[in-house]
Length: 436
Ligand SMILES: Cc1cc2nc3c(=O)[nH]c(=O)nc-3n(C[C@H](O)[C@H](O)[C@H](O)COP(=O)(O)OP(=O)(O)OC[C@H]3O[C@@H](n4cnc5c(N)ncnc54)[C@H](O)[C@@H]3O)c2cc1C
Image (cartoon, rainbow, N blue to C red; front, side, top):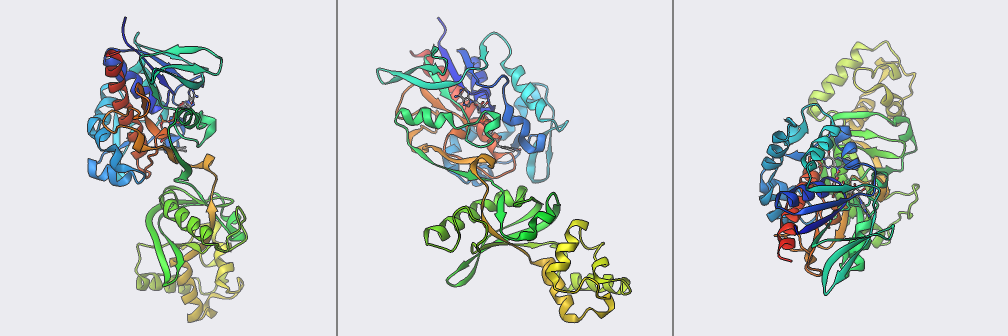
């Protein structure tokens, strides 16, 4: 009889692992608790799915900020160039955008799910939907079966745990894999949100809800003994929400910001746990016009103020700022809204310049884990062989994807990780199964 591999979780990691194990000659059973595969893929890249990054190994590892070096073998086994070729060969054309981000040509995440499903078609991968794994059965020290919540037991020669992280639980990623791995003796590195929106204290933030800014530069700062300390700086797109800020550059900054907030909390800082009414000692400075030097911006401002000299101040900013931002901006400037523009003083103009280049919000915390793009923490990489993805504690058990304690920046790096760890786990699980 053919060796049998059981894969838990039909996300990108599990689907790749299942297909790869089948290509290696195994009989594969893929268990998924939802009624369809790859639900999280559908929400990726704002529904467009940034499926990988056309980068080399060094860049990939640098961007996998949580345990990148663990992923060296996985990336080499299935680098992004191969991921792109894999999808192209299966009939999904892709395109490369700014920052080497790779998307399906039609900008539809559903195309990625369809392609992965096509990959699994044939008689070697059987998919069982509505089947939630509850535990793994170990016999003579080896993983031999998956127990489902229904009480059913599925026997396999090798098992792959690819249940994802603990964010966006509505997609099926509810963190079951952590519990299952922990019950087998694996260490679960504490879970934390990675790539997460930030909450801010300013009461006017709600007025900006829904406003998206492109080509801005955000710099995160914290107070330090020696003065102000820069935590990070990003250029690109961000979004205001009713509670704070979100969007690609905020996600990237959220890691050092969260670390700084945690440090402040540890050191008994002023921040109230979960509260929103205290200064956190961490703030974002947003440069709304980073393409212009201070002199260029000043002459631009003078030009606008001269042009609109007969208007009231509040009606003079239409060409400089998005509509939604103007009332907040006027308020923060301290300049009376009705003041005739020709009466604006040099000092007031200086204040406007400051606001344009150093628009500040005070960060009080991150949003909860369920809203994170990725979960940091998970099954400790120390207990997984990076060349095969096999557990060092329970032979016959393999891991793939976000359930492992790895996490990366935005840009397609996290799905690349799901694919390459899935590839490696599938290949070696099938080989290990054939030796049983
Ligand atoms: C809003 C959002 C946007 C994102 N955009 C991008 C992007 O553009 N590019 C990028 O690279 N990454 C992006 N990510 C991250 C990326 O989606 C994840 O890192 C990736 O999906 C992880 O893949 P996975 O297969 O490990 O886990 P998941 O995709 O979480 O899949 C896990 C699967 O396991 C199933 N499962 C869970 N528990 C059980 C159980 N007990 N029994 C059976 N099945 C179970 C789940 O239902 C699910 O189908 C985004 C994430 C979010 C939330």
